[in-house]
Length: 429
Image (tube, rainbow, N blue to C red):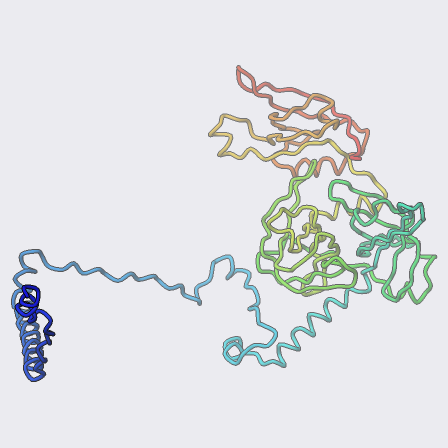
C-alpha cells in the first residue's frame, strides 16, 4: 500500500516541460533597437574624432611631409666632345618604324641603298682577298690515314713583279704540309711561307706570278693599307675575310674602342675593338668606307670580356713589320715587355725616366745577358728610349745576331745604378 502511495505522491515528476514559445514581434523590436544604437554610436564616435583630431595633432606635433624624389633626365641632343669631333652614324634597325624614319630623315629605300653601297665597298676588296687552306695528313685510332684542311683568310699586301705577298694568320698554317691559296675566280695554286712573326702571329705567304694564268693576274689587286692613326671611337668599319670563322663572310659595325694597347715582346700595338660579333677562329681585316685596310683581325689578343667581338691590330703600326716579312727578313728580338716611366711617376717615386721592364722573356737575349725585371731601360743603341715604340723603332733598323748597347738603371740600397750591356739580338722562335 505504501508503494502505491509513493507513486501517487511523485507522479508529477513524469510531466513534460515545454519551452516557452518565441515572441517574434518582441525579437524584431530588440534587433531593430540594437541596430539603431549601433548607428548612433558610430555617428557619435565620428563626430568626436573630427572634433578631437586637431587638438590631438597639436599635442603630438604636425604630420611630416615627405618630399618627392626627382631624377634629372639626360638631354639626348647633348654630345660628348669626343663624339662631336668624330660623329658616328646613327644606327638604324633593318625595318625602321615611321618614328625613326622621321627622326633620321630616311625611308626604307634609302636604308636599302645605304646597305647596298656598304656591300659594294666590301665586295670591292674581293680582288685582294684569298682563302688559305692548310692541308695536313694524319691517322685515326684505327690507323686509317685521313686529310685535314684548316681554312682562313689572307689578303694580298704587296707584289714585286715575281710574286704576290699574302698576309694571313699564323694559326691557319699550324701543322700544314701543303698550303693552297684560292683567288676570287676560284683559281687555286700552291703557296710557300715567306716569313712568320711569332710576336703578332702574322705570316706572309708567297705565290709566284708565273703560276697564275693571265686572267687571274688581271683579276688580282694589291690591297690599299690605309692610315689607321685616323681611326677613332665611332668610326664605321666593315670586317671582311673570315671574321665569323668561315671564309667569304662580312659584317658591318663600328669601332667601340681605339685606345687599348696590347703588350708584346719588344713592342706595343694599338688594338681596335668593335661591336661586330666574331669568332675565336676568325681572321681577315677591317676596312673603312673607302675600302682601305685599317686593321688586321686578331682574336688571340682578346680577353674573356671581348672574346665574342672582332678585334684588330692598327695596320699603321704593322706596316714596317709587314715590309720586313714581305722581304723575307727576320725581326730582331730582344725579349722585354715594359711600361713608360712618365714625368709624374718619376717625380713621385724618385725614378729615372725610361722604360720600366715588367718582364723579360725566358731564355731571351735580354735575360741571358743579365737584364732583369725592375730595371729601367734608358738607352738602346744610340737612342734614348721613353716608350716601347722607341724600342721597336731601334730594333726594326737592326738584324738578328747584331750587337746593340743597352743602358739600364737598376735600383739598389743606395739608389739607382747605371749598367751597360752588349746584347746580341736573336729571332723569336
